[in-house]
Image (cartoon, rainbow, N blue to C red; front, side):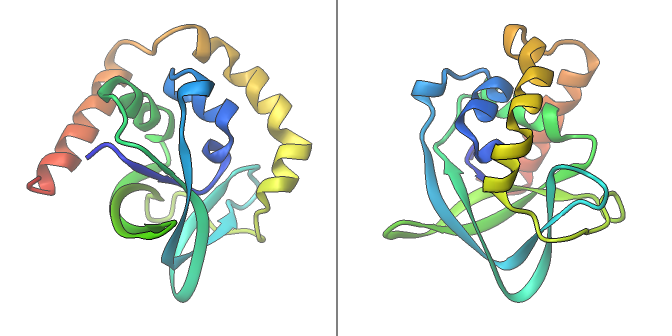
Length: 161
């Protein structure tokens, strides 16, 4: 399984393309919903985090089954603050779709105020894309990418798929 539920800056097709290495026009991000979680800004950060909360729900985007290289790049990008959690999301008329969630490591990201995607697009998207430009031009390499590959493979193997 190489599907991801995205709830933050990666919901933006341009940011997703820069991080995943996939062409923006080839990227299909389907509206989806994750129950039992809430989205907050990470305290003193421009990006969000999630935490479990009964009765809450998050609207986000669901990726298709990504090529391994794209999935590894996503994990590489998020690996410092987030682990992978297997979740079930609803997407359109389809329910019960399994996907990976980038879930903050315990204590890594204290929650801040509510996070608004549209406000982030208007205020911070351009700066984020400028910061990501070097990543979009090259594939990450070395021990960090090997760690991301291992992290993704271990998570997949733990699902017994």
